[in-house]
Image 1: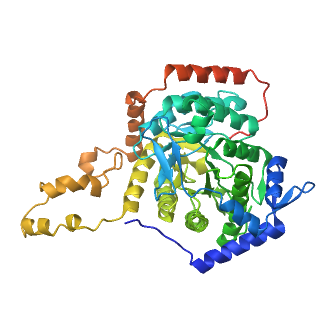
Image 2 (image 1 turned 120 degrees about the vertical axis):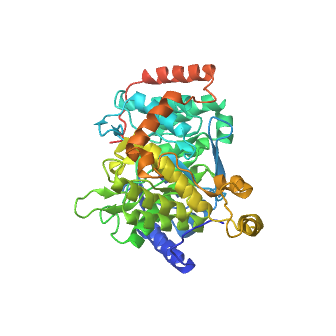
Image 3 (image 1 turned 135 degrees about the horizontal axis):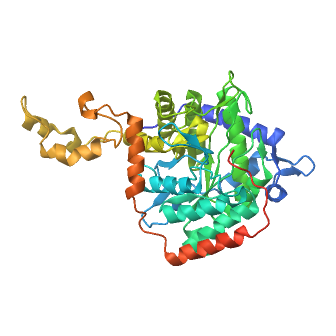
Amino acid sequence: MTIRLEPFTRGELQKIHAATVRVLERTGVRILDPEAAKALETAGASYDDVSQVVRIPETTLKQLLLLAPSRFRLYGRAPDHVLAFGEGNTYFSSMGTAVQVENGHGDVRPPTLKDVEAFYRLVDASPFLDHASWVVWPRDVPNEAVHLYEVLYGFKFSTKSLDGYNWGRQYAQDTIDMAAIVAGGRDELEARPLLLGFTNPVSPLTLAKETTEGLVAFARAGQPCIMPPECMAGGTAPSTLAGVLVQQNAEVLASIAVAESVHPGAPVLYGSVSTVLDMRTGAVALGAPEAGLISLGAAQLARYYGIPSRGTGGNTEALSPDYQAGAESATTLLLSGLAGFDFIYDVAGSLESSLSASYAKLVLDGDLAGSVRRILTGIEVSEETLATEVIESAGFRGSYLAHPHTLSHFRQEHFLPDTFLRGSRISREGMDVAEKAARRAEAVLREHVVDPPLEPAVEAKLNAFVKRALKRPATKVLTAA
């Protein structure tokens, strides 16, 4: 049994698709990387090199979308870490690129490489998180070196699949080359991808030069890429949610078309991070209920096209792991889970619209992810689970606590949180759940051992690559801020 929410009828999906086609054919998309634009032109689109606008006819769009695989896999360094996209699974990732750290005790400061290591190790230790993202953007190294250290530390302090970096051709290639060292070569990396790229369109209707260059590099290397617009309803997209879905759909499909035009069969994920602009403050509202509604629509559209999908959930505008943080994170994550996304980003650690990362909240969100995963598995109905013989044997006065049926099933049927508080007030000794989570994070960082460790010879090659790259002339790079 799989529980899924689908807001649209087939007819409504077709209306959204038709509106998207109209946008792509009439208005078009600005593509600021000439190589990508010309690849689409070769595939059948029209390209104006003065305005940099590409218009994609429906026939060309359909041909390119058919090239995108409906299933593919992403691998971790450890053999048992495999994400099988397009097979009905939902995977969870930590948040990405926060520029501040909240330490669980109310203190906020800039992140450092020590935080990069610590968050990788926490994610590696979590049984509920499947992918290791760049939780924080360190401030104690130059911006142009961050991608090198993130990938180095990711392979060293985690065994799970990692984020790559798509900002510009050179930096994207750096992360691909480093992954190839770990994989044992370029061919081995393409056969067993280790990196997940992110190519965010710039709403409205623009594919930036640098991120599109990164998309092209990842597509050619066979590394999966996500195209997640962050449309803000009423700001960078129409205020109506249906209008957001149309514009977002145009941006995503144009990005997928780029990937397939430069490398047919390139693995891609249909993405969404869209939400509303708070009209009172002018701030993005990633924890808003509308973000969950947009997620429901985006995941259904991805299935309409037969392409694996990525959503966002677990975000909040709260400044600490408080009631607001729990409510917004639970709402957005549960809706993204029920939407049926293959992959959900920002699940753990996010505060302040993902500007801040929290050690305590990352641990708490692990329990939230476990709760949502349990809900998504639904209820199994079989002779064994209906338990009629067990009910008969217990009768009117029996207890189920020590019954063999209970002992054999409760761990699968009941989610047992690691940090959420249960039991009487006396048994909790007055401990706050955020305090308990902060202590839990400290304990994991003291005790967790990354296993298997990165092979010394591979680590030496990665270190040597980083040293060579650091000697290059500095190039302007987009920071996480």
